[in-house]
Amino acid sequence: MRNSRLKTAVLYLLGGLVTAVFLLPLVWATGISLRAPGIPPAGGGG
Amino acid sequence: MKRFLSYRRQLHLFLLPYLLGSILLTLLPALATTAVAFTRYNALQPPQWVGLNNFARLLDSPMVRISLYSSLVFLALAVPLRLFAALALALLMQQKRRFFGFYRAAVYLPTLIPETAYALIWLWIFNPLYGPLNLALAWLGFPTPAWLTDPQAARFAIVLMLLLQIGEGFVVLLAGLQQIPRAVYEAAHVDGADGWRSFFYITLPLLTPWLLLLTFRDLIMSLQNSFTPTFVLTYGGPYYATTFVPLLVYEVGFDLFDFGLAAAILVVLYLFLLLLILGTLSSAREVMGLYEE
Image 1 (cartoon, rainbow over the protein chains, first blue to last red):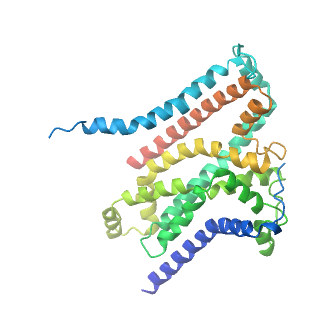
Image 2 (cartoon, each protein chain N blue to C red):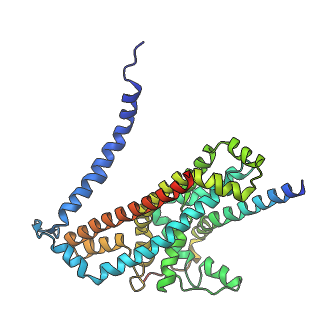
């Protein structure tokens, strides 16, 4: 019983982490685009 | 009542638009490209037949060699990592529990973003000073690479950003996992197989055809999909580390107007991918043979 609870917790934790990794770039980009005046120039490239 | 069209005919009819699209948009341009590869053509004057001259120039060009090498390194990194990530995520997210539908949608979401927008997002993320990636790495005490100006890091940066666009492979493998009957696992469980054993002796062998399909697809698509990121993020730099073949073809064709050479590089790429796929197929046959024994 305890084992299966632990397994469920680990599954949810892993799933949540993966979700965060996949969603954060998009959420972050949305945030950046909402406060447009302050963004740093998108420099880069070689 | 007799049906207007037989079931087979209906299927053919449904396939027709795709077939027409493939012929018009893929097969004919590929054939035209092959023809252009034997000519000198700059889009202003009519093409002149030069035989194998373009292929001889291609063999002499250090740029083509560098580009092929970069592409190979990129494929060797990107394809296994993408497949492994898709498989691991499909295994994790196949649960029929609450919130897992949301998790699955989140994994698929970055695949839906238009390529250029996605590349621009990552241009910000990889910014060495303001970018969240280096801020997070610094906060955790890790070294902060100059992502897009260091040759090794730049190649890895492209791999990293494409690693989050694995939605299609992920969905295919989820479907593959659902096709495996529960009864097989139950029988294995009765026989005393634990989690890892049932993965290696049931899940993996039964998923092999799907994984094979995805390997072929990814070998072709990874290189093609690398065009937009390399164009937007690095334009082939630093020191040509990210000048993969599609970008080189673009540069030779549309910057230098040397369409003959560009087409010749493409023909070599076709052959190169064909060899790669045949090699994977023959090694996969051996693996499948092992499973069948």
